[in-house]
Amino acid sequence: MADHTDQRVPTVVADRVDIVYRVNGTGAGRGSATAALNRILRRKQAEKASGTRTVHAVKNVSFVAYRGEAIGLIGTNGSGKSTLLKAVAGLLPVESGAIYTDGQPSLLGVNAALMKDLTGERNVHLGGLAMGMSREEIRARYQEIVDFSGINEKGDFITLPMRTYSSGMGARLRFSIAAAKDHDVLLIDEALATGDRSFQKRSEARIRELRKHAGTVFLVSHNNKSIRDTCDRVLWLERGELRMDGPTEDVLKEYEAFTGEKKPRKKAAA
Image 1 (cartoon, rainbow, N blue to C red):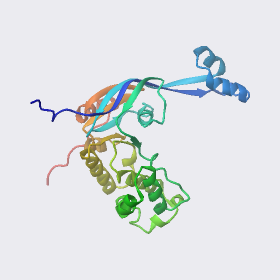
Image 2: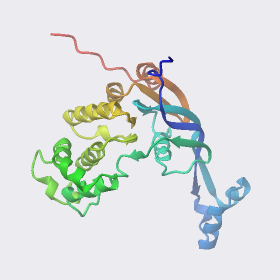
Image 3: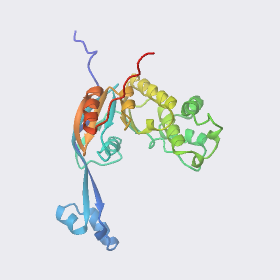
Image 4: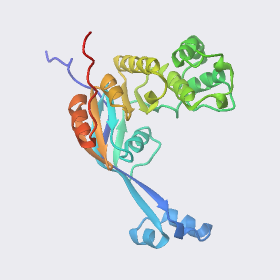
């Protein structure tokens, strides 16, 4: 009998994906009719005449992600990481190629959209409902979400409106809400850059748990240590192109040589 234990299940397939932004130039604003026409016309000559500029954000990117993987997305600023993540989540159309997903991708901070005028407590309930959790599930996990976020460590902030939160507190609460549920595909964009080291460790541990529950995690981060601690595979995007795809340490070694960064040294034992 054949052994199928090593067969991997694809969760995201990107097939020669191109993503193009179209930006209206300053010379195109001559009335609403002209502006509307510029949004419709696609041909190069019409774009040039109207002042529309195209930005090729992602160029011919292909990869396959598998169940149980944690994949880091790295690259210098403007390399297309966040754009690709939004396309996988279904929030951006592709110009050509295709993206196929098995299950529902969840982009952190979008599925758990928080409202600034409501309290953190109310946002936990609304964010959980937005992710498809039942009211019973939210009530059962409510205290765990609050404790995980750590926003009550210096006061009862969960009962205050979100507009009183710092950006870091809001980001931690968004991650905590999203991490309360097991996801088919969880897309995280720089969420681990917020908070202290204790919160980052809790976040990294939770990502490892999500992988064990047959999920796939994508993590965009400029913190190479978070990538090393969390991901077993890395996609390196540069100027919209997939420059390298492979094991974390192999890709980070090449990336750090490219950027001139140095891998942190391990502290010697006392």
